[in-house]
Image (tube, rainbow, N blue to C red; front, top):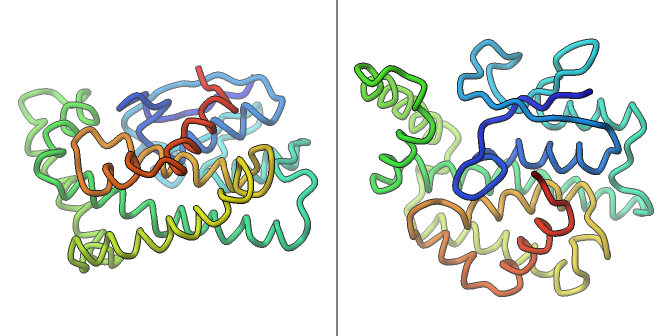
Length: 232
């Protein structure tokens, strides 16, 4: 049996990480038998991050590499898509994972109202005596990374404007069909859906969470994804 090494459930989601949710969706659709194994400290994992897939032969890190492994073992997440649709899928996935994702990280880690909740959720395994200094050091590192990536250099209004353009692009697809590229979920949905769900699930009311919750088209799409590929 395959084992998905994942961050634990949080904020009402299968995992606090949309990449772990994405991988769980792929596993659920792949036809393989699998189970989850939760962890909070991925430092001993390949790439020092999650998700990781434990196969009979080796550990496979990174959601894209896990997709490659599953497809090499018979999965096809984009059955029936044309070459153009496959190109569109790739573009949607990159938009979600290389832009929307960092908006979520900024909304959570840089928000002083959210931070105490993250400390309790993500750092519970650290002994109480050192939990605050260790978690604060990690937070500083994450915030520094957001500056290097670029998202933290924009004002809140500028960040929301950039998100808005992505959401308009996603909505243009959803006006046409229940899922991004047709009547059933494909690889694009397995990436975009968890990102939008994570935006909505941030455990403090922010302009970003409100933007998702107040958009009936996107909100219903997130619900539809969760019903289409139920995760335990």
